Image 1 (cartoon, rainbow, N blue to C red):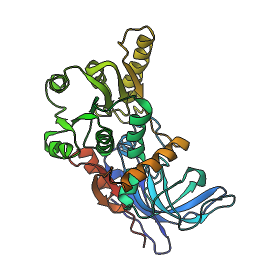
Image 2 (cartoon, rainbow, N blue to C red):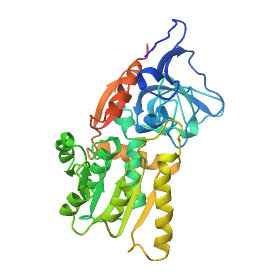
Image 3 (cartoon, rainbow, N blue to C red):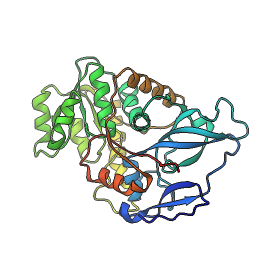
Image 4 (tube, rainbow, N blue to C red):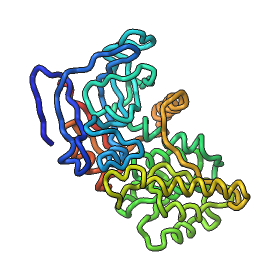
Length: 348
């Protein structure tokens, strides 16, 4: 990573300059700290998340791609340092959480005050930020998209990832049986979460799941997309739900920003029509995308309470300085770690 600095500039940030490898396309710079405009607040970032969305953006395969160059960073936790005209209910020193979708990878960020949620002052910043995008995704899929009962069986793909670890913990907490996919090296970690691990690379992966759940599963949570959605659909019990919440970008050329997501959209629409015609045995497929709003803030507050109660123990895969952003994104690309990678600005 190339670092440009001047003593008189006070805000460190990371910019993504183009498609390619993180080591060449993530650049650390220093510039002036932002000021709070009308209706906005400046937040001093304590922790910012590293997510698969940044992988998609780096490869210019995100469904809503920003234009290069830009500051990545989907979510953050920090302290308010300044509020602009018209802002009420916020004071300097308040701890807040936000999901701006981009812009979090810097020391100071200006954000609309209405998009800031309260964050507990005592939580570890890395833990607090891991519950924003990943936590709300897991919580809303489990609580708002499916209807499940204690004893039901669910299949969680990527059970060792940032979303998967939290989704597994929530499901186990509610008395659900979880079958979680992961590479063999991560099976001990998946078992520790309370799930039964299965290697997603097995030649007969579907057969391995059927051995564990001969009657099918009541829900499948899929973050890969593509043909894997057909396997998940076939594994559903009558009345079950398949939730597609992301799409792999492996094998696509940079710039094909929407193509990785077409297979999931096409299958969702086709199965909606089939369900309307009574051809799916009550099964359904839906797509999920986390978005801000009143429900987001309410569900994030619920997640922070669960963390306080010890129900949720977010797995932190690594804590990195801002200038270590390429290494953090590389670790996520390599897929060798469990849980969430987090950037911790140094604040000089």
